[in-house]
Image (cartoon, rainbow, N blue to C red; front, side, top):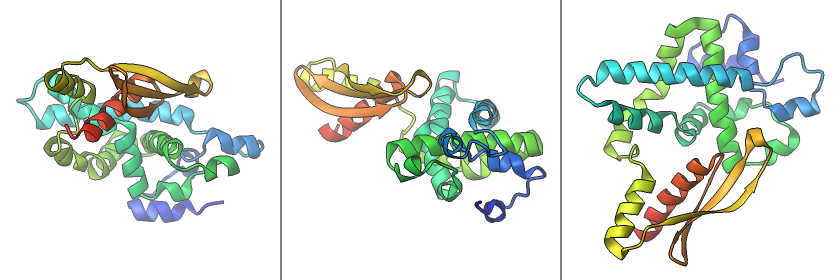
Length: 229
């Protein structure tokens, strides 16, 4: 079993109920190989953590940016709580070292691991909420996630890439981009899509995501880079 006290020490936290902490790191696949493990997987904690995270980020933006419109704050929040940002923060906090995965899943790196890390971050917030309440979560999220906000604003990471790519394409080449599903797989609760963005017949770039919307956004980001727009 992994030594979760190392993680507690790193984060400067001490869980009253260690099971909450451990459960946040249990991927469904781990239980397929360890069916008698005493704890369940982290999906219910993820469900809770997602809501807590959204509320804390929303409250922070509301309190600290009184002159910003609802639309702008919504975009900033989306950029803070998306899978890429959450998995990046989880990686920096070395959550990777504590994941409880099946042997097969442990070998999978890349995109699949990114989603697992993002989900684990949300599950961790859920477990922290149950163990230490709203204030404990608030401190954690402000310390490790909200500090990314200045970079998001400066680099305009909150802008919707699909809209930007459409504007650029129409202005530069007079073509409206089209999106097509190139591949999809996985059960309904864990679907995966690869979507291509086309300018007429030209496949400009591909994007991957757990929803069509997310895959289209990733494709648009990649297309902006490919075209240098």
